[in-house]
Length: 175
Image (tube, rainbow, N blue to C red; front, side):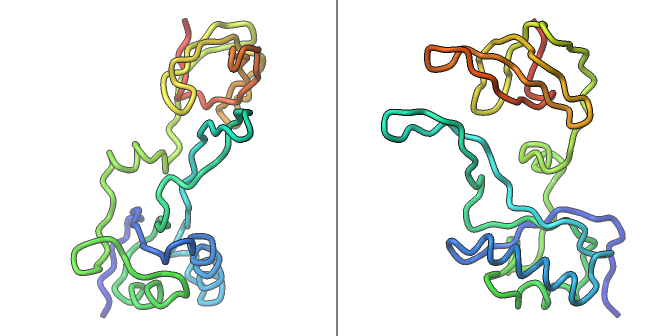
């Protein structure tokens, strides 16, 4: 009988270079086809916003945080290993001898895989400072607040002019 770990944990799988999206799509299809939605709860390719300069213009773009890796939140069972490893684009799990090793709580927090509820009271017109992410160190004024998505639209001086940016609550502090 397969060993069952009832609590869902995050695991990392390795993919072929440039195959992250293909592996992601194939994993989603496998989950649906084999009705594994109760055991594999989430598949994610972690993205980050970075400032990129192209043709003399700077803009914020999304980039893969960990090229060649896809993350799974699942209730691990030995019989899932074979199914996942044999998915097109997947080369194996990250762990000793290719066996799954769950991420620690600190790794999950640093990778921002789980949504962290932040209790911050801000409103339009408040002055804030961005404390993490690609815009770390910038200060600005809150234009609007999206409580549902826990984001604030902030006007920051960037590239010589005021630029509106969306920032998660856990990346800002009030001044």
